[in-house]
Length: 161
Image 1: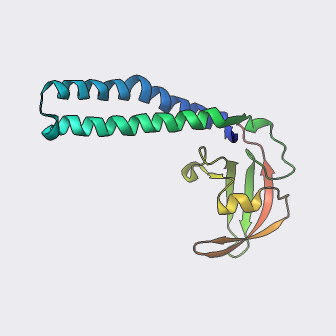
Image 2: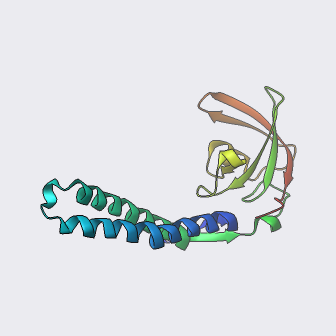
Image 3: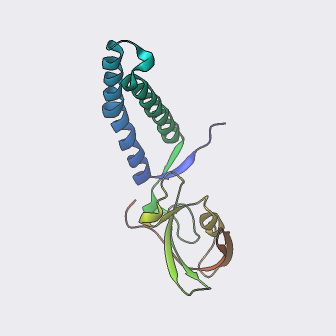
């Protein structure tokens, strides 16, 4: 069944940029490398040909994967999401009740999430536990290093999508 996946405009644009680069730069380049190597003869022991074909397969596979993700994308304008509850696109601040440390994450889809930029997937252990929560709600989350006890202290819209 064809199922949509929520995605931010930023995440969609990032995947489109990668797709365009693969289709217009990397794939033609590797195809040329394979064609040149093929002209050298004896394909069984031609390392450039063998490597080129493998690389071409990887690139074509990634192109297919990106097209599938983009076709399933349900683009959400994160700057307009409702902030009553933690939902896709919201920026959620949490208080770790064990360490008294505050952490803030933007809830995004699996293709958008990047912990280095402060975003997590709504399907991650923390993301799935806080989706639907309101300010003041407390949750216990099982993570690899043990249980985390968190309280939702703020829910906001991001300033950019």
